[in-house]
Length: 299
Image (cartoon, rainbow, N blue to C red; front, side, top):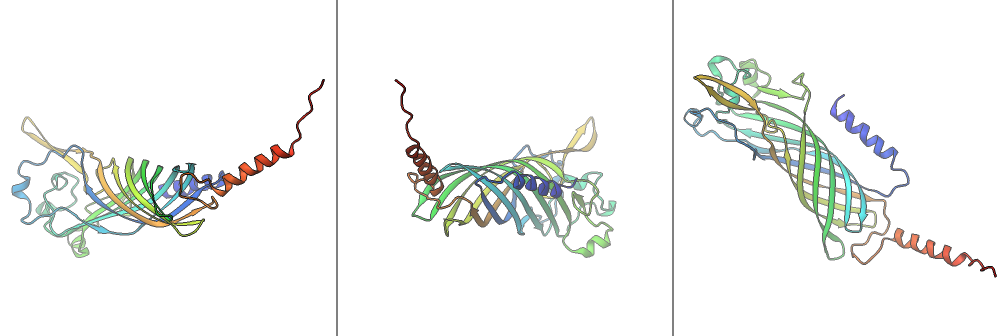
């Protein structure tokens, strides 16, 4: 079953079981960038620096829009839990790549006469994620603005394409892509990776029902193909050299902006205030107590 079908199915289940509950719903556009791989570094080929193309560069980010939906359930006036369904695109471009170990591996599809390209390369990665969220509103500003801290954890399904920027070279060297997984250019499924992150954001109240939403998040995705290039370690055992596949988590920065709809009427930002629904429930409770006559004690 494809990941996006799973996302839709889970969303349907949540909507079906949410009847009569009080939730907040967020729809946002997002954009992200690959920051690097903070885990254990690859064991590079010993002459990598000497053999790399002059002026070679790591990937520069290319921002592309994505989308995310979040369903939130308030626990207290300052704390809420939720589930987030996201689609994030992370892309990059380099005019001339460094000598990645991948180019020295047997999985490099380029011909033997041109194993290490000196042409511009790109990657385009799709991240489909299901994340549990926790949000704590830490600082109200004025009457309409609230600042929050956010934590996320869950799973991300990663698919990527790594290829030449200019399609002419894809034809010239008879390679559609240099590496692909979990896209229409590959028969292999997306990889599932544990994901966690932290972020900060703010909401601006438009009305009792709607807020403008913004957040910036740093994610750690346990996958080495977020930048399109699979990781390999250079191994030298008794003079026998090889490239062995390895993994490393990827750091991703993400920014989101969108709109929040709240089913909670008359929300208030001051900690001492209750929502109107809470006050109504308390009033109904007191009315019932007042309307119920005390039973007379039997003598």
